[in-house]
Amino acid sequence: MARVRHKRKPVAEMNVVPYIDVMLVLLVIFMVTAPMLNQGVKVDLPKVSSEALPQDNDSRVLTISIKADKTYYWNMGSEVDPDQGKKTQTAVSLDQLVSAASAIMRENSSQGKKVQVFVRGDKAVDYGAVMAVMGGLQKAGVGNVGLITEAPGS
Image (cartoon, rainbow, N blue to C red; front, side):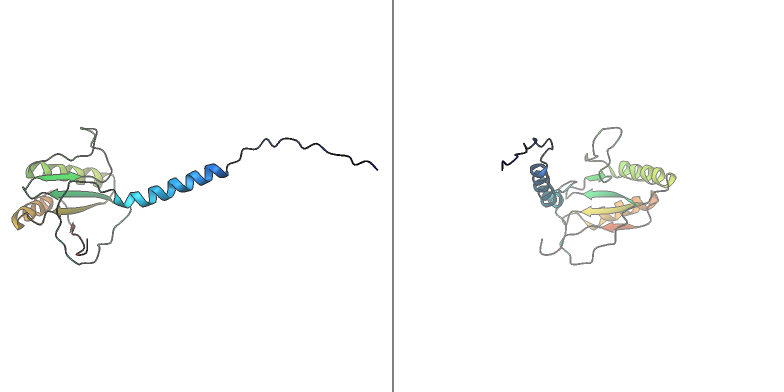
């Protein structure tokens, strides 16, 4: 009795297992490096043990940084400044900061969006500079301001 052999047809499917492996490796790399990315101006924050403020994920975040030499910077999260085409990281005067914050608050309130405002003050900056910023933010219509610190072990 003769055996009949059936010829196998070549498989015309693409093997995606190596692509899945590469994708998972890239995912792990991005998950490890994402928390290390720090945006903003380098400020030596005071170390205080406190609880983290609750964050509203639907609101936008405006971060104001005060360096030790009393220069002011502001950054609207990951958004881009339309005039400069980049994130705002240039030193501004207190009056410019207040007018920018006022414009941001007006624009977002007209769109029905909330803005969370945080102040990052260098530990070497005096109390008066931080209070001047907070007073200017109050004039700009900001009701709540959060102060950013570092944990003591950092």
